[in-house]
Length: 138
Image 1 (cartoon, rainbow, N blue to C red):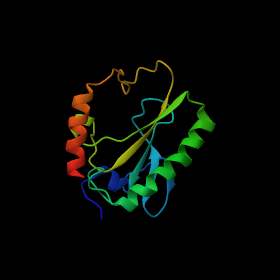
Image 2 (image 1 turned 120 degrees about the horizontal axis):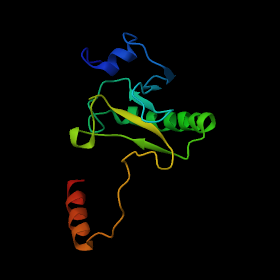
Image 3 (image 1 turned 60 degrees about the vertical axis):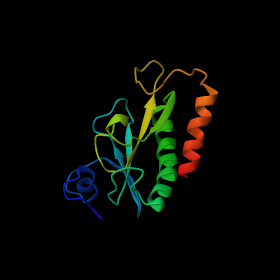
Image 4 (image 1 turned 90 degrees about the horizontal axis):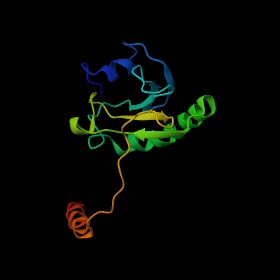
């Protein structure tokens, strides 16, 4: 089901042009027109879902094989020094288009992207407390 006000739904419908990379029954992949680095791509579900939590699991299952296919092409064409897959849910995570999508984010050393965080040992009592809360919710 499409959302008539969603930019990604309009792209899938062909109402807005895109640089389509790949398409199957469940997903649509294209170049990001606001790229951080060359080769920045998006994989979106064809069915409108606001985010990961709302998406159909079968649609999500189609995302990773498509990401692998596109990452291999990006790797061969551009030889990045790394590739991130980035998927955001909600404004605090940086989501700006409320239609499920995963970014294929080619990286160069010292490119200035702020996706990495420092690794410091956690408080194991706190880690266990949070673990117990998550397990109870599962």
